Image (cartoon, rainbow over all chains, first blue to last red; front, side, top):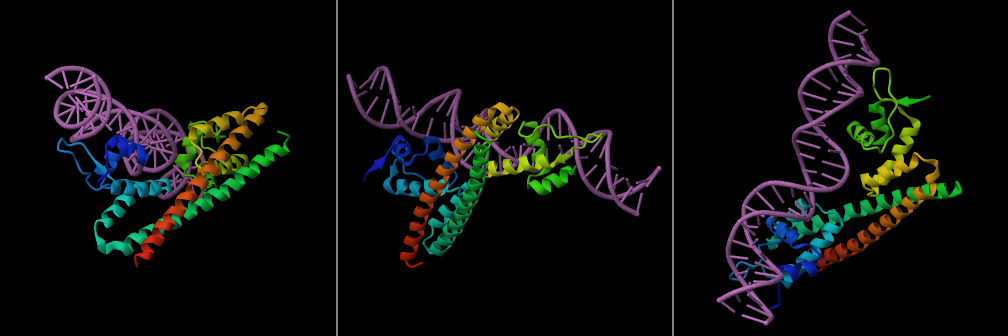
Length: 119
Length: 119
DNA sequence: GAAATCCCTGGAGCGCACTCCAGGTCAAGG
DNA sequence: CCTTGACCTGGAGTGCGCTCCAGGGATTTC
């Protein structure tokens, strides 16, 4: 089975090693497997999960929600709750996109206004 | 001339009184006019500026950039620099919208995947 | 003119999400 | 082996953007 050293996991996931440890402490990652000497070895599964974590963080999901989602993922019987959480998040993402677009339009009006002033 | 008490300015602008004072300290607002007793009186102009500040904050412009923009606004000869700053910001806003949309698409795929699992 | 509100200042405190550090242990190349 | 670099832990520190507080003065309302 392919595994990854902390440095490799950081490289592939795009999170720093410190952040990976922090996420583990926070319960966002399940305890990562270790070598006999105590060094972490990340699996492909871990990397896959980190990929989703990256998506959720990029879309502004707070750490606390991520932990909640991670906790739900430990229990097979929570599929519906997990989907609900993701859908709720999707709505918030949509809202921020909408806000961003609206404000961007105002920003562009301001820029046009400057242009009309002869800039 | 119409003026606004701190509470009214907060109400209209959507910022808290504390935030208004903070922005003034930070140089994002020029010194607000005062009554003889030292109480602030916001003008329509102040409110208009706050409206733009809100737009820029909503689109993620950091406080430091806002201060820089405010400083430029003190000098008539900086129109070009101000426009450049806004256009640069507009590009960053566009980037975050693009990122958000891309990640939202991934999020929705994940939700569809759950749905396909029979949730 | 007294009571109730509102506002003032300087500075401390907070929540979030990391990021860094000291002092040590582990692992791989020569 | 031995060195060198990667990794470990617990905990402190950082940066951002507010937010709150104490102690006191200003204003409005009755």
